[in-house]
Length: 264
Image: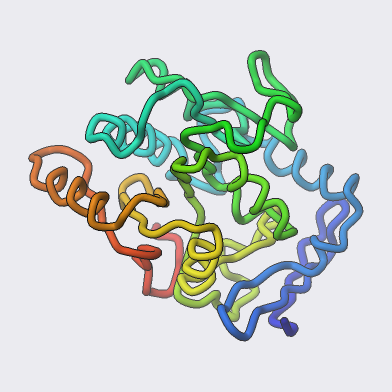
């Protein structure tokens, strides 16, 4: 990797971040965050996320609540059409204040277990010792993959899944990360930035064979099942009127090709 850009933040424990870029896949990571003392990283996270979690809106992400509703709708629909199995061992990893699990329970009577590694724990959350590798049918991460500073953190989440488990991911993925310190996605707690190429590599390394994407939920699901089987289910599902629609592809669905920006 080589130096890419820098940005000044001037917040507690973080004055400036230096970002480095992989010349092969375009993945970008903040070297500053990688080298940050754990106590400082915890402070930055708590200061940023504590400003909105437990509240009804996030000024830095105006579409947060609507996106969560669409994510709950898509997850419930994917179970209905048979692409998500069971409901005994579903996990929201780094769930924040647990809004997604509450939506699934109150609207669809589906149980999504919660685990939060960084922010204060809430009643009913799984402790770290309860995260048994290979024990979950479905693991979803929403706005999480941009916070990891090390490869083993990504691998840990993937390792929680059973042999045929399904991985759900919501994060920003683009064709190439903008060479622009004013880019909206560069904030004090975002330190990993993914491209279509880097996600394709990760998908293959972890043994997934295909994926789908729901644009309203901005949610990918990765499958180890045969692409023809998943694709046939998606094709039938997309014929329904008034139901969520999915983009399917063997490998990673490289949906976003335009320069990433925040719409007004």
